[in-house]
Image (cartoon, rainbow, N blue to C red):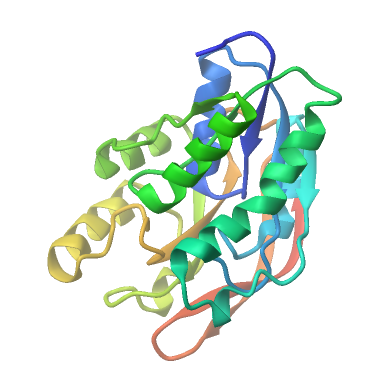
Length: 239
């Protein structure tokens, strides 16, 4: 893996992409850009909820953010998941290719844990662009990953849930050691992935050792019977 050159963090503001960037910085990689794709209402490849908060996170991290807002990705109407994944990757790849004109692009960071669907496509993109992929979460034990994030000082807030065993009380909850233990139990009962890798829940990192200021959120809870999310009404950098 090339340590010299500029690295781009593929970034949503969620725990996994944040951890990948944090680990890259810890490893001495020069992460000079974050790149967020705003996928709209649905996506096969990207984290969907509250990606607009990535700008605040990038500001707290002191890293320049590139935002990609493609036209409707059409995920809700897709019939071929493989074709859909390839199509969704195109605006990301185009943005990275454009970046090579202004920086010495060495590689990208990604937060995939177990999804071969996403990782294989990102690896293929890196191969085409002749850059490296830094994926420190890949095939690691999810419980140990969660504990490492919490122990490092990550403040992780659950902003969306959609799985058996996850009720309205999980919305807005901090992912701490107690919550992680409950998620491990829910994995045994219902198959809920402890880190939400199957879309069971989504998160946003409000603070961490790589951030200069915490992010303060105000929100309303939206519950739809079996799933729900936080409707963010205000977000700002705290002291």
